Length: 211
Image (cartoon, rainbow, N blue to C red; front, top):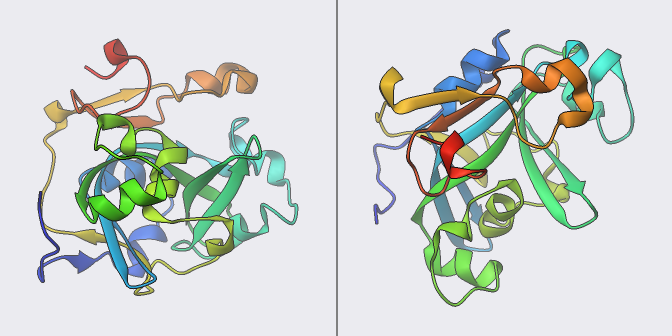
């Protein structure tokens, strides 16, 4: 597995402040999500992510400019974390994008582990590394130690950030599909907002959707 390298470059703030959430989501594929908590470094390459287009997207928590205590962070300047609890169990790590007042976000659904696998296993209460270690958003947050207390944390921090090591996937390496688990959103559930690295075994969902 790849060790942390000095040429990993933290994505600049302006990366997250752009208007097109789908473009940002596509460009996050291949980037490296890094956490440094309790003197432990964990990192994984992003291989699956979903875009949520704020007030215009029925699948988004901020649809119709809904503002609650939970979603208020989505209205911040892009480049901070939005972590919510799903079914009272799973921590779900999202990245806020766009400018203040426009509540777009990106859900990170799967990573290919690179650094700190032993720590990931310990956090996940697993004894052996398998593809389900970071397959699905709940397992991503668990393995990297991300929880709701990190909501609002800047991705320019040294504890939680996304890095670029120069790797780029070709367009032929990427599939675009409808999102998972948002049937309640009606026609918006069919929007092509899920981006995946084709054939990667850490990608969640049915295998025939990942080819």
